[in-house]
Amino acid sequence: MYKGREGQWAFLLHRLSGIAILAYLLIHVFSIGSFIFGERFYMTIHEIYDISFFRIGLVFITAAVVYHSFNGLRIVVMDFTGAGVAYQRQMWYGVMVVTVISGLYAAWTLLPRLLGGY
Image (cartoon, rainbow, N blue to C red; front, side, top):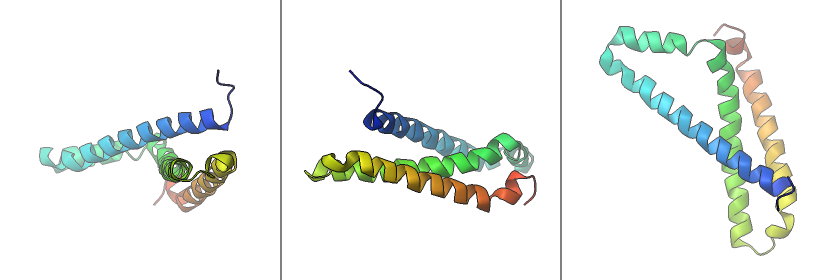
């Protein structure tokens, strides 16, 4: 029975971040491919991407990519080293620290865009 410990949260966040990355990839491919329907359609799509929901989404997708990649490395370390399992909790907290720092850096870097400018 799961008790809501770090391993369960690591698994859940890894799946959710993977789904978010896939959704971003599909939206990105659609937006780039929308140019075949003409420049007006392409620009309309990119004007929609300029709403605040998508601006804030840039920060979250950055954090999702960082979390997914570093948690994947944590999983590799656990699978291929015997000692990795003993430190899985500490490694997960390290992954979370790196994710939060990168999310804050992305928010700081994108602050002018988040506030409505470029």
